Length: 270
Image (tube, rainbow, N blue to C red; front, side, top):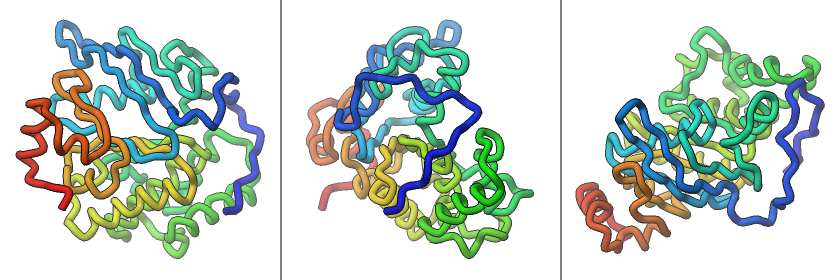
């Protein structure tokens, strides 16, 4: 696949690291804690995110999934612990180094979070206009290349309300990846979608991984969807990773809370 040309940007790049692209672990989360007042949400989360794979984090409501996601992209600061991304402890960065490292991540929000008053093209172009010095032609070329790769180039001048739920997700992925992010985080991507659209979104996550070589982190409680796309699966329970492994391994786990969650979802590998 043709790679996008690297261009100078106003933000500094992520700090250099001795880690190489050959490292199979893209993100190492170690003993991560986060509290709000007396409410201790994350209680020592440790987790490996595998490079170029689809990594699922599942768990019941209130288990800390959203809080973990917010720490991952440093929307909030963890109380303690490490977020090691490409060998750099993201949790310790500040200022321009923090801003640069954030560009490693792209975010696909639960309801796509597209700007209603902007066309598809302008939605995807927005991060480039905000964070780069690219010419108008370079912006146009990159946006149209990305939309074409994801099969929505024909919708470039439409508004989000004119698109189906599945197409909106494709546009959201295009926007999340337009700054050439290495890691995509999906927040409950199939919530509220019908079964056909859910399957389309699952296929989109797999396509994005294969097409662009990204690492995917999916926050979800949809077990049927999880079993279709997960390479690595982790169960978050009461602020800790209670079980982690392949989907098949978790389906046969002897951890009581994990087994109960999976049993209640009524899914199987068959």
